[in-house]
Length: 318
Ligand code: G3P
Ligand code: CA
Image 1 (cartoon, protein in one colour):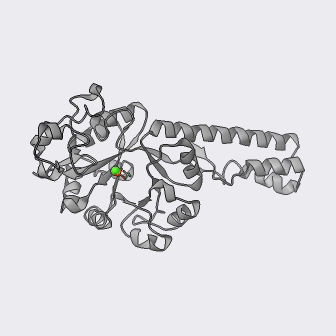
Image 2 (tube, rainbow, N blue to C red):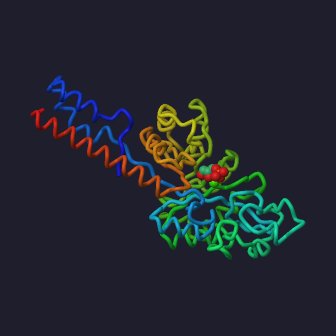
Image 3 (spheres, helix red, strand yellow):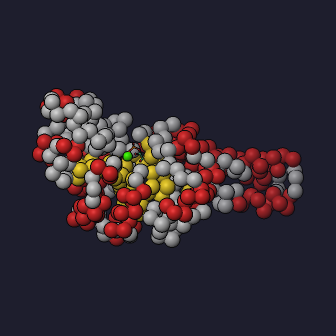
């Protein structure tokens, strides 16, 4: 699937044909309208799974995303008091589980203050909808197995690594044991990202072959320093401009390829199309299916416009 950048050629082609300007140039421009002016449509990544349809960061959310045909999912990884890696966004348990009711008196219910056995008892689904009652907080191991079983791919966020010293080496070990550091996963099924540059650097030192993403929007002048350890620069979508995306793409990352951009969290189809036209490589969304549809519709419309423009040129014998 492909989508054109903003300044694409349809209107120019129509203008040229209607005004009968510069016939030789128009002839040369027509084939280029289909190829050189087009860019790849971004990957759409389910933010915490499919959180508009199932409780975030649960196996149910991953399954829901799979059912929608969403291949890439994003999650957040943290560590329990007794050292288990689990999948949850907040650093406390209260919002997305029944920890407040089950463990009164243990406020603020920090993940790091609870053992895995305690967290396993929590209901991570009822807060969202009764249909998901009994859904559990997944361990990273069970999450990786489910993503694999669904033939999905993972944008794994190391959340709040400053709370969990050494989590980068531990994560690498867990990924290794789960079979996620083989060639297939490393080549095209795994990206590890974080808001913390030191954490990302630490992970890159331990497993340099794994793709990494820095969460943030460094200035163009700072990009080269991030490129030493990050393959992606993943910004909040609001400040993204085409010029900034170009400046990111102009830098090569630790694996010798141009840096990529995945913008978050984009739940509006029109905005997703704008970002696609700016050339972003990925869009992280709470509504991944809707975003995929918006991108697809934009592509279809542009192809129809192109067909129309090319027919007019053909009719005019250009
Ligand atoms: O993947 C980007 C996004 O997840 C970062 O923000 O707070 O949702 O983890 P947050
Ligand atoms: Ca996240």
